Image (cartoon, rainbow, N blue to C red; front, top):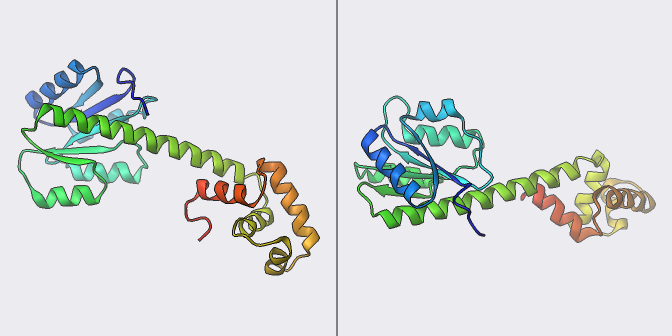
Length: 211
C-alpha cells in the first residue's frame, strides 16, 4: 500500500512546547502534513476527522489533567481509526506495557532517533489505512445484509455454514422449497452466487458472525 504523505496527517499531542515544535519541524521536513496540540483537551476539542490519506497520533504519555493513556482510552471508546504512538521522557516500563496492551503501535523513550521515529510514523499511518479500509468493507457488507429479512438472514447463515436446503429446512422447521425461495431472494438482494459468498459476506460484516 502506497502512502501519500502530502494527504496523510500526523497529530502531535505534547504539552512540552519546544519538543512539540521540534517534532513538527522534523515531520514537515520529511514531507508529512502535521498538526500540534498542546494538550489532550486541545486534541479532543479539535476532534479531527480521519483523513483520506490515513494518519496517526504521536502522544506524550504524561500530561496534566488528561493523560496520554486516558486520551487513548477515550479514542478507543469512540472507535477512532487513528493508531497511537506513545512517547515519554520517564522510561516508565509499567506505562509502556499498559499502552501496548491497549493497542499502541510503539512506545518511544525521549530522546529517540529521528529515523526510528519517522519509520514508526510511516508504519502507523499504513496501519491506519488498512484499518480504515477494513472498516469500510465491513460497513458495506453490513449494509448489504441489512437488506435481508430476519428469516432470510437465518437461512443465509445456515447455508454459509455448509448445510443443504433440506438440512436448513429441518433446522428452521420449514419446507425445503421455502428454503429454496429464501435462497433465491438472498442471492437477488446481495448479488452472492452461493454459500461461499454468503459466508464471505457475513464474516466481512462481523468476523464472529458464524460462531
